[in-house]
Amino acid sequence: MDDQGLNLVAATKARALLIILMATCRETLTALDAVGNVLDTSMTEDLRRMIECSEGELAALTARIENLR
Image (cartoon, rainbow, N blue to C red; front, side):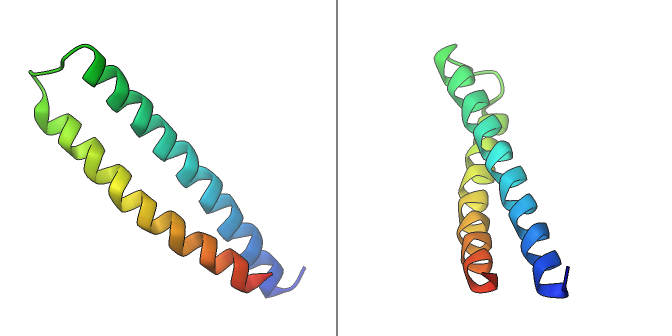
């Protein structure tokens, strides 16, 4: 496999892991919101920021994968 193929594999794997991370963050946030989590608002804000940041990273990785194909 050439360098481009290896980069494609690495980028695809990173994208898959990022999707898992985002799904985990969203589900955790949903659970916290459902129970009316008022004790740890910094955690929910951190999760929201993580999701927002990850969405940008996901877009960048998706573009990179398309360019490598």
